[in-house]
Image (cartoon, rainbow, N blue to C red; front, top):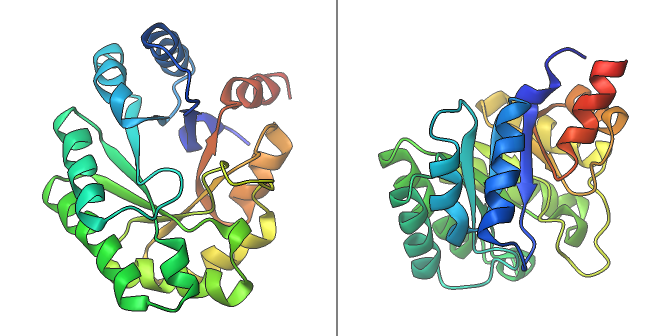
Length: 223
């Protein structure tokens, strides 16, 4: 597959990451022309500054990784990230509320960030955490996210206890659920090689979240 780098959100979300780590990470992402980097809110300013002469965009996580904080806190976090220069927001839904079928809470939570993102001309990706959901819940979460105004639905944070990799089946299910609305799918979680990334794209992923982008690109180049 040509130009796989245009699908990749190169990700660095570890707790002990330093400013120098982010600078080096962003320089590498720019070198390989990844679509975006995905970083913690505190590191947005550094990422934006490092990438100011690059086409690589900056995505920030919000409500990460559990998704169960107050909507007002998520909004403030997203506002700060956007003020600092983030081009995209990857937010985690309130997973417990979804499993309780508190649909209005889940929808209003997403909608608050979607409205902010739209006003700010920022892309919103909604993380539904597929590893914690049943098939019916995955479909429901996608439908709620679409109704609330997201641009993408995303498989996972990769941060759950005993977290399993994203699956081709989940990506396909999500794509089939949202594609008619124009919403896209981001596959994220455990995607560590070229072959897996290609399978995700073939299943409908419009973006790949990975910390292994360099390995994926090098395999494409050598293929």
